[in-house]
Image 1 (cartoon, rainbow, N blue to C red):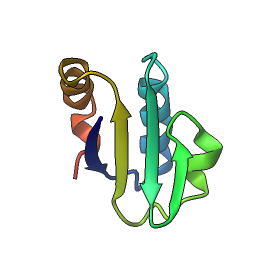
Image 2: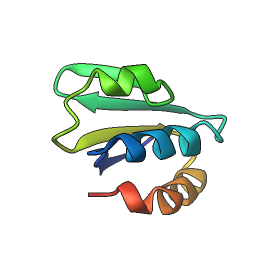
Image 3: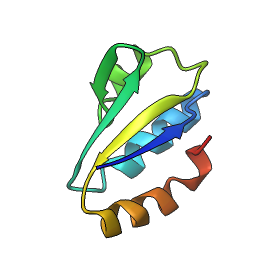
Amino acid sequence: MKTIDISLNSIDKVKTFVNLINRFDYDFDLVSGRYVIDAKSIMGIFSLDLSKPITLNIYAEDEIADDIIKQLAPYLV
């Protein structure tokens, strides 16, 4: 598992993030405070406080997770 902090501070960023994350067959969780939601759920993401950075947990092998993180570069904090 890899953990990174991301920023989803606009509706467009949320939409493009969900479209990107849904391309992968791995599990992703977003953690904000005590809330943990599926990163592939657009409704779940909108239930979080998007004004602050959110932690993304990537449940994939290290090499694959590194490739995913490269594709998520526009969202990294």
